[in-house]
Image (cartoon, rainbow, N blue to C red; front, top):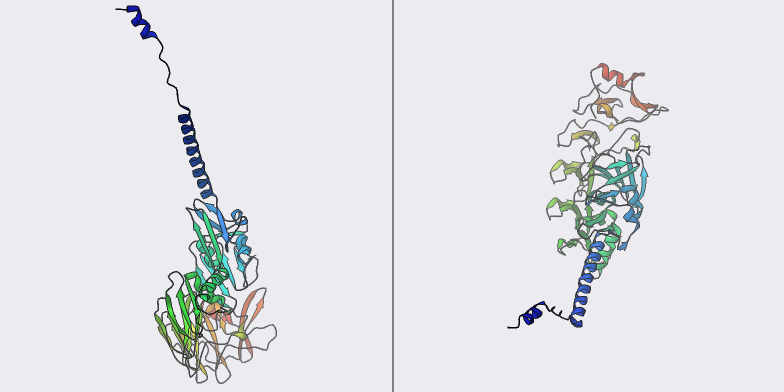
Amino acid sequence: MDLFGDVEQKIKPKQKKQIKPTTILLIFIAVLVVITILIFCLLIYLKGNILKISINGVKSEELKEIIIIKEDKVVVPIKAIARYLGYEAYSGDYKTLEVDETKSYVKSEDEVTMFTAGSKIIQQILLENNSLQEIVIDEEIIEKDGEFYTTISGARKIFSIYFNYDKNKNDIIIMTLDYLYANNLNYYMQNGFAEINESFQNKKALLENMMILKTSNNKYGVINVATGKMILEPQYENIDYIPKLSKFIVTGNGLKGVISKDKEMVVKIEYKDIQVIENEKDNSSYYLVTTSNDLMGLIDKDGKEIIYPEYSQIGYNMKNFTDNDIESDYILFGKLVPVKQNNLWGIFDLQGNQITDFEFSNLGCTTKLSNAYNIIQVPEYELIIVSSTNGKYDIIRTDGTKLFGFVLDSVYKTINTGKSYYYMVVNGTTIDLVTYLEEHGITKVSQ
């Protein structure tokens, strides 16, 4: 045995294995691939977290500085975004033009939208027919430092726009109604439908995925733009959309009716004319209908007849009473309707009950006194001025009760330092009406 030889063998250092160049190259390539994938993923992540906003198909960097996203919730500054949507923004009250820091409005060529801080109710006036409607939005308007803020849903209704936020893509798409309508019309014209010079009110159907179309033979129908299916077949001579009610006034064989977006016949197609009237007190809507022989009636929004169409006139011309806080030509105090038959006036309520006989030659009193105003009502007390065929006046309550019995020579009001004062004249003597009412236990009605 070679003892020393064995020891030498054991302590002899082992030679290291040599790594081939091809292996090093493969490892380097693998590392590069991993780094590339990581960079790509990082870019995708960063891209996904960069807010993208487009309006009418064009990217907008400016709106990134305006629209606020906080905890995945989009907050829209109404006044700041208005000009990008074709609106002008104003502070104060649109109707009175008074300065009021809690109120604001936006105005386009087609509509005016009014809103108040702390309220979910917005008011919208369609300028083509001066119609007013109240709309309830999802959250209260917030005011801070002169700016008013709302949600995506609120912005859609305030500006009549398409507004969508994709949280996963961090992407906001906004389209104005005119842009949306033009794109859809162009598509349907390429598919056989004719061009329509549509009203803004009718365009609003698009905000509910509906569009009024006209065929080459001048027949109108309604299509669901999301499904491509017809809601109303193109068989009508005309169709008008009612945005607030999501219903359509259709004309067939020269007569009109009302059909819902669910194809329900709300009002039969049998009237010469149908007009939508609004009750500003409770935001309810009614159809004022006129028969082919010019008799008028009133139907509620669900199609129930309130006042049968057998009267020569419903509603009163209020043009002579512009300084009397008149809200409607058709509804007084949110509850009473003036109705005319055989040249005499009577009063109905909105449940269809006849409150008075047809015994008044006219409603209201006009005066020739200087610095005095014509009146048809005393709003604070919910009283109506009526006249008899003998030329005398009386004042009635909302239940039809007469206060004096047609002995008044006239009734009028004056305004002093912004406050209204009411007077009645009896046998040449002028009496303060409010003082008389209070002395006889007739108090103001809570507003």
